[in-house]
Image (cartoon, rainbow, N blue to C red; front, side, top):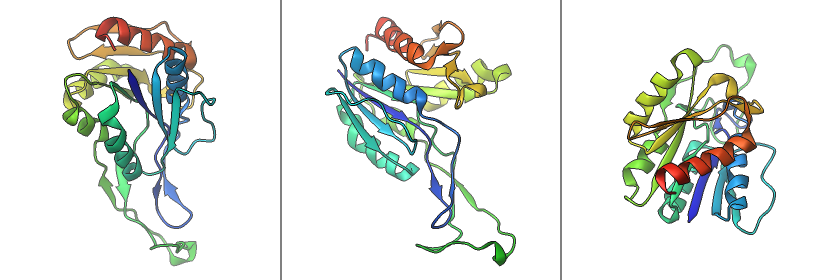
Length: 214
């Protein structure tokens, strides 16, 4: 069984030195990759621009990306060979129009500037639409705690995926996670609260194997 995992943020360039990004640490996806290979799964980790990576392992391939477009191309390349996709990356919602072309740098002396943002492609929804019946696609929903399950459930239906991990905004860049797995058939599996991300990764993979057979 081949497992494909995405982790970390995307960075969308504004000029030669600046970018639009987010605070994702990539810890959850790295923990998932480490847990997967520990279980004997052949795993590919598509990892964004974060300073850390999982320890080398003969069952693990790590491929780096930076932009949403690069991640999209890697998903197109690697998804056909995967049985399970765990989309833990924090992908941009918007792509900015660059403030300067090529290797140029926008100067503060040019005065106030405005950003034009275009909706980014929905990579997870695209993957789910192209997946075969034998493939399982799992997403992650980072939402406010008071609307967490409602928003995660809506995202699950909208993207047409097999399951989604609902976790509150405080999870970003944190060491622990309190997550709930929502499945497309309406079942809900709730992990113990405030788990270390490594422990949650093992819990999630075991739960997916029990509930979905992957």
